[in-house]
Length: 180
Image (cartoon, rainbow, N blue to C red; front, side, top):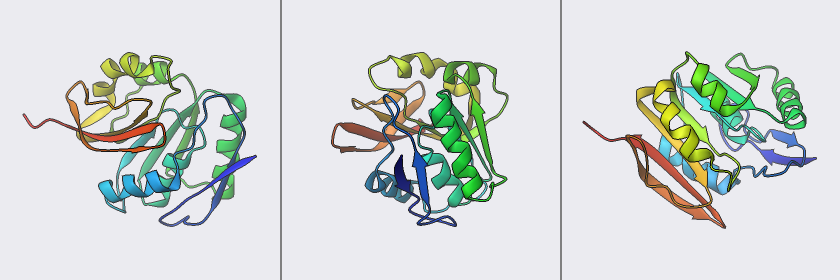
């Protein structure tokens, strides 16, 4: 089993374990630290969606930092099982919901609205263009999108990159809606 550590908030220093799985790349500590510096250290009251949850590093970090609700969507059974085990390890935070499902189907059918989406799909599979038209349907007006991709992304619909960085081969960016 692989592991990643929660870096801030209530569950700081807790270790999350996850299996090897094709395309699974947990967001490194340094990148998560940068992201939460951009967002602010606390996410009190936020509703977050971790659309390709994988290791759960981003979603568990959001719960640890006070998010009111975090929905994790994951399709791979072994990875999904590890997410449930980590939820148990953290004493089942009430703010956390784990769903087995397909990202496109979830976005197309969800009635929930989110303040922040963590979007880190498998690389080189064309996910971003397929997800883009569905994102406005689940995002609040002032929502942010955090994207990790194999290349830099300038925009997703009305959302434009406001902060970006690169760690190794990973391009990461925080996007906000353009002011009208």
